[in-house]
Length: 325
Ligand code: AHM
Ligand code: MG
Image (cartoon, rainbow, N blue to C red; front, side, top):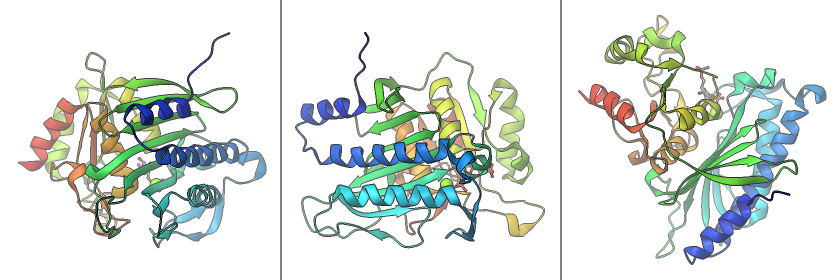
């Protein structure tokens, strides 16, 4: 028989090795429990009629799917029950979700079901999260943390059954779901250098990007393979293994100016910074439309957006030079 190391056991050793408390383990147990429940509802969603619209709109003015609601309810329940969370910020909640404001230890920023256009087809979606820690030295003011201050970030790809977790100064790790729905076999992930790199972006938008971005694409795209699933977690999962760059540039010259998105589309706290933190721990990089590190952006609004260029460092450094010129 072959036995695999579980994620929980891996984290237990990690905490003990660094002489840390078990609080982080309790928080991770909550996130993993939430992911497994979301996985279950997603896998059975087509048969149970859970893949359609719920009939209302979210904070971003987008139609809410029944699965968005289910994933939000599940995640909020487990995070609250952990007793370790001060407050959470979710794509599915306009307001900051207050939890254990007195004794909580962590801030959790999450998108419980990212990649909505894949939901009606049961295709891959993501559950993405970033974690920051309370100020243990002085008074905690509850300010919104920049990615640089995250202690961990991660993403579950659902229903594929993979989990990628980046730990501050301790690498990006991948786990797979086994036959008992346990995440097992910790494997360190580092952006490869000697593979055929991929570019991942919504090509239908290319003529709406800034001119210098359009020019860069035109001059360089033939060097790369092109892949786009329309779900950040799934697209980024591929890039971590194959190398390359995911891009969601600012939209600045749409024929219908109302459709411009000068701030980009993706959300900073629970999408952009989550990916940027995983990039950093995997030897990669991530920048915004100015070519500045995503991890340095100080959020002013829980739901603020950012352009995102994330992936292999040489490629992101190259586009950063173009963006900042
Ligand atoms: P969502 O939060 O509404 O699902 O949007 C986020 C998603 C990302 O997962 C994905 O990378 C991107 O939006 C796809 O957008 P588009 O359909 O414009 O290509
Ligand atoms: Mg989302």
